[in-house]
Length: 353
Image (tube, rainbow, N blue to C red; front, side):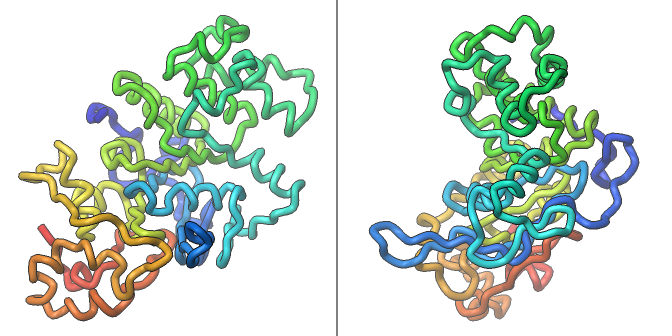
């Protein structure tokens, strides 16, 4: 999976558009103790889709949010965008809590834009490329004298050149990669400070995925954009991200600089996800037993313990932490900082390798 991609900047720290190391100051966008609950299927129980998450996105960095389908990563991303309201905790932008009034959200979404997973579904088939890109500009700023210049600039930055060639085309006349570039251009036209990209290459052919990932890296390098990239693909995270947060059942279970977390994963869940990648060096993939538990019935102790290969193999018992795994919550990880893991076994300095 796009193993030839290289992140811009040295590998010992995330880089801004200038090439200087980004300061570890106040995050641009944060989740603080964030929880989101929904009524379970058939009105039974309460599903904790996001359960006490702390997460920081700094200016000019790419943060990958990874995990299996249903782990809560898309709900977390939607909550960071203000599309879902948290049950508890807060979303903060530049250190200030997100306000949910219509005007406040409109101002916020001018600065933090969504790139959706399916460009075919997110583009109106009756709108030309020009109108699709200009739509956000018209909603947020109304008629502007420089509309065409800004639309052309956004299309060019998204790799659709010359932009005039695409103005009058419709989505069905474009390839999948071109449609995704139109979606990205529609976000860029507002000159945001951050993008939230939900599985931005999942619906694309393998032949064009690398092109879109390269585009996201170029936008970070050229414009200083921050990006939260939601994905189930750890190979993609390895290629594009500065930091990674691994989610399981509504909680971040491992997080830190991507080279540390993915090159030497400590949580058994991250190790299992990594084992299917050819570049991981694993002798054979780890197949996790069963499915993630029902989020309306999150188990006590470590929420991964029912599927944990370290516990199942007896290693946790020999290390003296099996009871803790079954009965004690390993806690919530902080939003940013060095590599960290919510695992009783890993806390002993051991891994399940």
